[in-house]
Image (tube, rainbow, N blue to C red; front, side, top):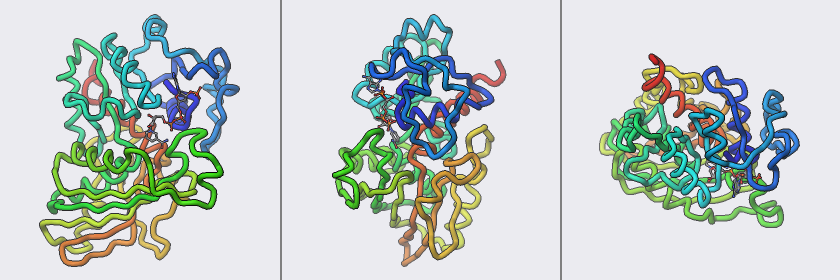
Amino acid sequence: MGATGLIGQAFVKILSSHPLFRIASLTGSKTGIGEKYRDATNWKLPLDFPEKAGDIIITKPDIRSLKEMGIRIVFSALPSDIAGEIEDDLRKEGFYVFTNAGAHRYDPDVPILVPDINPGSIKLIEEQGFPKSGFIITNPNCSTAGLAVALGPLKKFGIEEVIVSTYQAISGAGYPGLSAMDISGNVIPHIEGEEEKMAKETKKILDIDPDIFTSCVRVPTLYGHLETIWVRLSGSPGEEDILNAWEHSSPEFATHSLTKRPVEYINTRGSVRNDLSFRGDPPGMQVYTGGLRRTGNRVGFHLLVNNLIRGGAGGSIANAELFHLRYRSNK
Ligand SMILES: NC(=O)c1ccc[n+]([C@@H]2O[C@H](COP(=O)([O-])OP(=O)(O)OC[C@H]3O[C@@H](n4cnc5c(N)ncnc54)[C@H](OP(=O)(O)O)[C@@H]3O)[C@@H](O)[C@H]2O)c1
């Protein structure tokens, strides 16, 4: 759902050659209905257009017809204000919904799942009634996704306080997003609701309650959210301990989309930069850190997360892979 938007494009790109899932249907808003995906979509990713999906006809997100087609899994890239009700209805009808929208992130029985950080939270789907009913699994907001992946391995050092400033790309606002007059050559220190979301989601994902201070800023880059972070720890690990924690942060299980090195430290003077966004294997799933500094029990670093892949569709697809691994692979 929302296949023509930016997150939708990332979904279609990854799913069109995925070993576990097959695209059965693509939905959009009124504008593209009845058109082929290639005609209805203004392709904006810096990756080749997925020709295999090009002839699929865009339809309305209609639950009855999705059911008739035998579809089980729905990936949602809908705007949050629309997603809430449709996703609820889909769950009631038995669908497994993996969503990027924020509508259900704070429901107590809905996980904000980052498979290499809090895989255990997937069990919350049982509180939603699964396997008797469908479920909703959310992934975090794009900037939170990167923060959670970098902070997860540092949790063992006792995270007491986090101060984070973001430099978020234009693509984070969807397509067409901000007006060119507003963002060209400009920096805008306002992203509606983002600062509150980052603090709240990080606490839910990591299951900790530190003080978190956030400042979120839109900058005129296209892809990748850069963040500068200071963390106060109760322990006082050396820089080597921090680097080791990131280096050895690979998940204990393997899925198609999860990278073996969720956090890669960039040890060059340029530190992390937006042009790393689509690097890695699979592209866009790695979070990059750099510029590590330590003062007493405070640790500072930079971070880059691909907002459309790790912070968006790739994260959601990795969630579906974990679901398959935990609940379906023996069936
Ligand atoms: N962009 C990011 O970096 C990012 C990261 C993480 C999470 N998210 C979340 O992911 C979701 C999608 O974001 P996006 O950036 O991809 O937005 P987007 O580019 O604006 O795409 C929105 C999609 O939803 C469709 N849509 C809009 N209104 C609809 C309606 N009434 N009924 C059915 N479909 C409708 C649009 O179809 P048309 O093209 O036909 O209008 C389009 O396919 C949002 O909830 C956003 O908060 C975004």
